[in-house]
Length: 390
Ligand SMILES: *Cc1c(COP(=O)(O)O)cnc(C)c1O
Image (cartoon, rainbow, N blue to C red; front, side):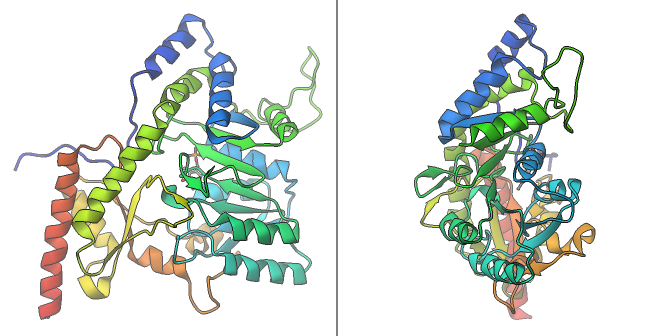
């Protein structure tokens, strides 16, 4: 059979209107980390999610870094972080010499387990080492259950930073995901639901805090002609050219959410009948964007591991990935504490052992998705028969 086109996990999907914004940046020579598109993108994104302000930065990672500086993280301080996430949720803690403590997922949402968080807070309080912040990750387009998390953190006086890099466009009890904590972070990396090729946004209702981060992220230049510096700064601002792409992308965010959800529904219709296959649940408290369709396959029922399924898809030029390898299992992070969902059971280990993310791009065609579905269905059904007769 002829070599078929590659199907990506999640690839950029332009609307067409990005060109006009980029063209305008060129025409007006705003080729800089400041300019009208940066201001416009911040204004439009803040209006979309409903926060007082927004700060456009060069990545989601830099936005988390700035949030951690805003909560006053210092060397040796602890930060609690969801374990089931991408490394970028944790790296900024290490940049500041902080000590991450990992919190397990709950099985219902795959997001931070409130009961694990509670045990971690109780024991931190006993040790007199409460964290400077809790970074809650909203995984694969779905908000964590923030009410119990905010209540716990409120009781201990710990601010919440929402890593909403994967959940822009999702809701939690009618509010935009990423706007419930003290600070929220979005990413516009090439694989996210909307992209500027690279970029991020820090959102908050605390405008003074955002001003402070604005100052730090432009090299902390004091008000003087001669380049005076009294604080440590960073070069973290988003380019005006890329902010133009972001403005074009933001216009189609809701369409992109609808398309990702439709992708999920087609997978679910076709594959949920297969014994041993389960889909990441959607909690009743909100709407997930289904940024990535994540499934679990039970190897005891199906006789295939996530790695084998990913390899099978790769052999047909289809990109799939295992679910994030939890942070507490990473060689870099082995030294840090970890609190499981229940004292005896780690949910994230189980999700990592069984989970696969399927190609989920909003620009994937239905025939392309059928290619993925047919391959999985044929293979899993065949494997099951072999497995059962063995
Ligand atoms: C993508 C991602 C980030 C980092 O965003 P960048 O813009 O790539 O720096 C942070 N956290 C999570 C959970 C992500 O998926």
